[in-house]
Image 1 (cartoon, rainbow, N blue to C red):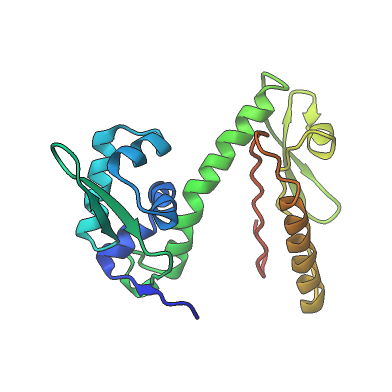
Image 2 (image 1 turned 90 degrees about the horizontal axis):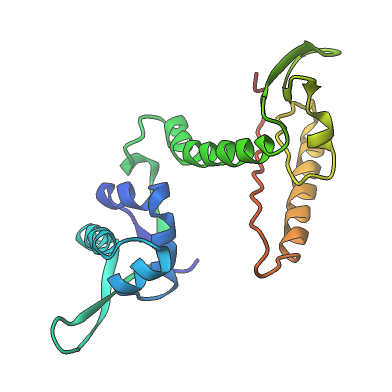
Length: 208
C-alpha cells in the first residue's frame, strides 16, 4: 500500500468538508501559491490565502517551496495525496451522520440541477401519487401527469429510486454491470462538452 497520512480531529474537519474538495484536489496535484489557487478556482485572493492558512495551521498543507521575488516571497503549498480519516476523529455522532454529511450537500446540488433541467420543459411541476401493482408510486410531473416521456425518453435526465428483490449473486451482477457501464462511459469524455453527473447508489434494504 502506498504511504499515507492518518488524520487528526482538526485535520479531519477540513479534509471531509465538501466545499474544500476542489482546493484539496488542486493541492494534491501539485504545489500552488495563493494567487494560483485564486485564479484556478475562481475565488478572491484573500479567500484563497485564508483557506491555505487554515490548511497549513492544521498540518494538512505544507509549504513545498518559497520562491524569492522583490518584496514578499511566494509560498507554494502542497497537500499529501493520500489520507486515512478514521471515523472516530470526525465530529459525526454516528456512522450514519458521517455518510449523510458527505451525501447531503451533493444530493442538494443534484436536486438543484434536476430542477433547472425540468423547468425548461414545463413551467408548473409537482408530484403525482398513485397506487402501483404492489406499492404506491410518487412521481415527478406537470399538470398533465407524470413525466414518463421526459425521464424515459432521449433527454439525458434520470431521477429514479427503485427497490428490487435480488439474491446476493444477482445484486453483485447488477453492481458489476453498472460499474462496467460507468467505465465505458468514461471513455466517451469529450473536451469542452457539457458536464453530466451520474450518481450510483446500491444498498441492501428498502427505501420508502
